[in-house]
Amino acid sequence: MAEQRPTPPEVDRVAASRAAVAARRARAAVKADVAAGRRTALDVLSAAVKDPAGVEGRLRVTELLTSIPAIGVTKMQRIMSSLDISPSKRLGGLGTHQRDRLRDFLSTKPTAKRGNADSKLIVLAGPTAVGKGTVANYIRENYPDVHLSVSATTRAPRPGEVEGVSYYFVDDAEFDRMIDEGEMLEWAQVHNAHRYGTPRGPVDAAIAKGDSVLLEIDLQGARAVRRAMPEARLVFLLPPSWEELVRRLIGRGTEDSAEQTRRLETAKLELAAQGEFDYRVVNHDVAEAAREVVDLMEIRKASARP
Image 1 (cartoon, rainbow, N blue to C red):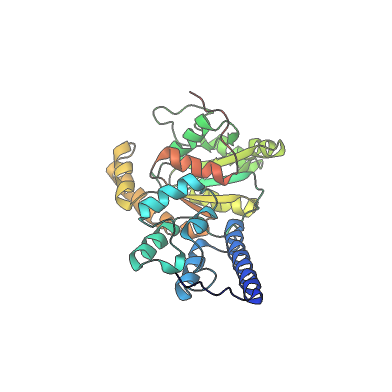
Image 2 (image 1 turned 45 degrees about the vertical axis):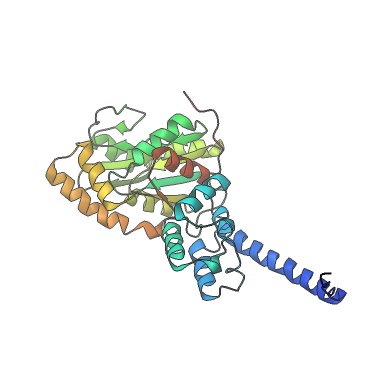
């Protein structure tokens, strides 16, 4: 007959139960801090490495990932599979290679939110040829609840671009007038060549109606919007790799070799500025990148157009 284990005293069971509740609350507080932007996921991982038995170290990797804005259960499961980490793993129990893979992934995820959590304005920027326009167009076609701001530019239209949809194409005199009369939310001269700017009227009108507004602009413009509207959320669109960025720039064939070289030099400086942004999204896949951007606006996809 198997020996029966002694029943722990009632006082021990009560103490253990209280300790378990306190531990759950502590982990919940960590997740809430990440979700609200008071702590970064990287900070939580670093704390877990320093103290594997502490609150952060006892947090499951799955819990940390789903506390990050724009990562739901389905996406979390894909991430865990790609990182080759078991769903049962806690941060403090990760192996060296698993920890390194997780750290590399988290380096492209949201940093602390500096914008207002209820902001209706999101700014999408990134280096040349990263696919900002392609992602923005996908959002226009598939997320009709998002108001996509149309920029004005002094450059000539590229093949396939439509006036009033892709850009407002204006000459230098008209651009100067819009600046002088305060009609620009931001404007900048890009690549030492043409000027780009965001007409302020449509943005203000859309926000006043309660619409969510997406600005797809360059790095200088994003900085200007932050100064003018601190509540805006800034999203930096990253390429999967430097080699892929070079391939995309050369592949689109819209610039000569001298212009391509100049733009790539500018792209290196632009990539170095990603730390200024509230969120970072890697453009591996246009549909996935667009979904991450829209999720950051806390909008659910309405009816997709065919």
